[in-house]
Length: 183
Image (cartoon, rainbow, N blue to C red; front, side, top):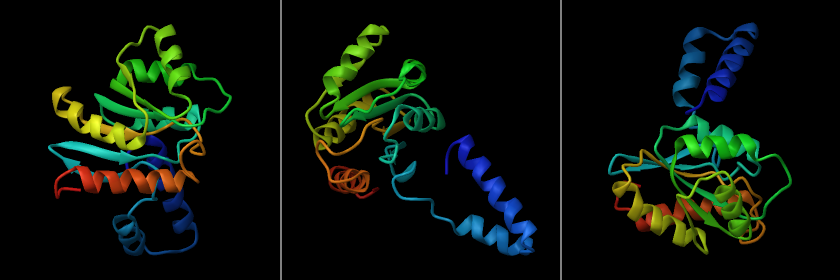
């Protein structure tokens, strides 16, 4: 699992296990066997050397910033949905530092486009749906030498989906359908 926050979680889990008297070998086995958590920086596949990561649980600016900060640049970021109130300043800075392109979906797309323009970031496209975003990311990723395609929406999912899980499951399904057998 990528990200310093996940390394911190791992260290806390190891400390708790040690305090509980669990043997080192059992702790190590648990670490190596842990598959990660769906929709939370979930690595779906690697296609043409590009990692496709599902961070659908990132439903606010802070969570999306953590996800974007955790992955290797350059990134194609898929963001949008039903916007929430919050401070987007740090998230926008991280986009400027790491994103090769931002694909905007859902109800928040036009508002996010305005915010990106306000901070001078113009490498974005508004697309209608998650399916269009995945299709476009597949086209752009090799062209832009992206290391990662990241769904980290910074939004609720209720404009197009019933939950963040539904959105993340659809992202996984689209990756399996649109990318060759690698996913």
